[in-house]
Image 1: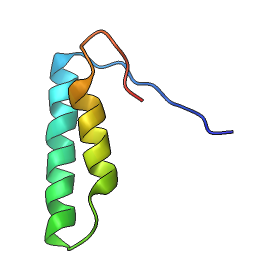
Image 2: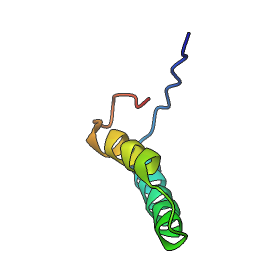
Image 3: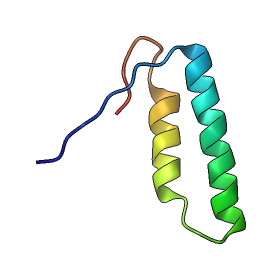
Amino acid sequence: MKRKHYVELNRQERRLALNGLNRFRNKLIAAGRYTDAVNELKIAAATVSGSRRIG
């Protein structure tokens, strides 16, 4: 059974998380590695409203 974990973030925390994911994605691109998982997390974090949770 797969577990889901949820994190509740405010606007500033979500912005910091997206910036960190962008930096990590850039490092992966520079190393020639796949960025699929990071892209999915960025989409999930960017499309959720402030009062909802991301998983």
